[in-house]
Length: 484
Image 1 (cartoon, rainbow, N blue to C red):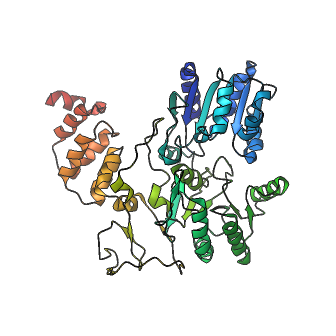
Image 2 (tube, rainbow, N blue to C red):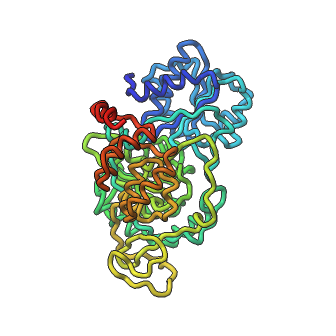
Image 3 (tube, rainbow, N blue to C red):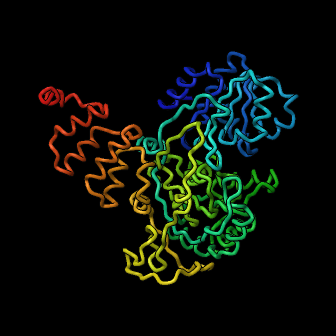
C-alpha cells in the first residue's frame, strides 16, 4: 500500500520517539490514521512482535481488519479487539509488545487504564484527531510525547480532504441545560430535542441544501432518531435508524445498504461519530447539541472524506458551531490540561435576531442587519417555523467573538482578520502582535500585508521579520543589507 508523504513523515516521527514508550499521534479525521496504524502493525508483526489493537466500537473491528489485510499485517501476531472485551478478559490476553489505541481520546477511561496497567512493558501508541477529554482534561498522564499531523486546511488544499460548507441556525435553546462530566446532561438533551419540533425543518433544509446526497444524521436519543427517519421516509427519501441496541446482523445489513446506495440517509445515536468510514458520504446533519469539542469535530467532519469535485455539506441544526467554531479551526493541541475558562467567559452569550436570524455580540438593542428593535427578552419558542439555514464563514464566527478572544488567536493571519472584522485601528493590531509574538504563527507575507494596508515603509517589514525571527525571502537580501 502506498503511503502519502505526510503519513510517511508521521511514521518516521514515531520511530524517532519510540524510546519514550508512550506516544500520542494527533491527525485530523479522514487523514488516513488506520493506514498508518496498519503499516506500523505490519512492520511489527514482520519481526514477530505481538500487536494488540484496541477499538471502542464493534462496528470498527471489521473495518480495521480489512485495512490491515491490505497492509499485509500478519494476524498470527496481531489481534483487533474491543477494549471492553479485552478489559473483561485481560488475564487471558497474550502479552503484547505494542498496544495501538484507536480514537485515543478515550484512553483515560478505567477500562483502558486496566489494560495498560496489565502490560506495563508494552509500547503504547495512541491515535486521535482530538487529544482532549470532556471538560478539557489532557492526556499527559498517559502519554509522554505528542506528535502532530497536518492541519485540516492543508489537507483540503492538497486534496486529501473535501472542502466544506456549514449551514446553521441555533433553533434550540441550551441555556438551561446542566453540565455533567463535561457535556450536557443526556436526559435533559433528550427531553429538549424531543419537545422541539424541528423534524420538518430537517427535511426542508436537507431538500434545499443536500437533496440526494448520502447523509449521516446524529441524534441525541433513540426516539428522536426514529422520528427523524420516519419523517424522511414519509417525504420520499430512503432512511434507516441505528443505535447500540440494534441487532448485529440487522446493523450490518443496514450499513451495507448505506454503503451500496440503497439507503440515502443513516440516522444514529452515538455510533458513527468516530472512525466510521464512508468516503462518499457527502452530508452530515447535527441534531445533538454538545459541549464536547471532540464529538463535534468527529461528527461534523464525517462527510469530508475526499472525492473529486465534492463539497461536503454540514447542516448544524443545534448551533454547535457557535460553541466550537468551524471544523477547520486551528487548535493548539497539547497533552496538558486545557486551561479552564474564566467565569466571565463561561457566561458569554451571543444574541440572535428573531427576524433575520443574524447572530452578534450581546448588549446591542438594534439588529445591525435588519434594524429589529429588541424589547423585553422573551423565552425562545419551543416550536420553530420555516427557518432557512445560512452558510457560516470564518468572518461570521469572528464577528461574534468578544474583544478578549484575541488572546486565543494562534496565527497572525487570524489576528489580522479579527482586527478587520471588528474595525479596530492599526494600533490594536501592532500592539497585539507584539504581545502575542511568542504564540503566533507569523509569515513574511502577513507582515507585507500589514505594511501595505497601513502604508508603512518596507523597512518596517524587514525590522519586524528580524524581531520575530521570520524567514526573509532571498530576493530581499540586498535590501536587508542596505538597511542594516
